[in-house]
Length: 156
Image (cartoon, rainbow, N blue to C red):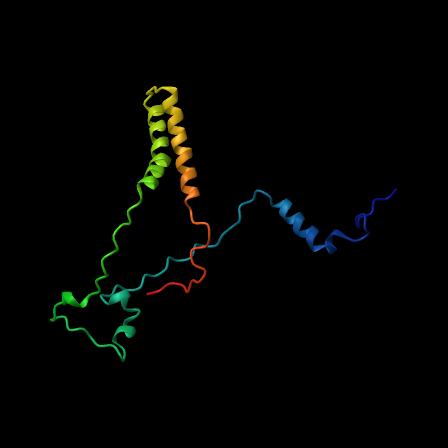
């Protein structure tokens, strides 16, 4: 039987560009690509005493902008002072106890574990119960309905 030089489909390998590209990849596997000389480093723009290196000088000296008088000192009463913040809200004693149970109980249990402090079993059970009870109480006290159906976005 004669071998077919055109391949099993009857077409030549030279006719198929994908086979030629694959053959070139396989033949040159492991060779390093030759790179021309590296490009020269970029030239730094000249230093300028103007803001932003003088690139935006036209924006601050154009029409509609007045130059500030540097002899006049800055007046302290010309700056914005926000209003004082509202006082921190106080919580009720029952909610405070629930928060202490949520954060305090695991902290005590973790500290006793880290410092190898042994405690009676019923104290550990009370701490776990304080955590679970505080969580359940806070979830139970959450409002049932939506806060406010109308929200017109941020207000200034």
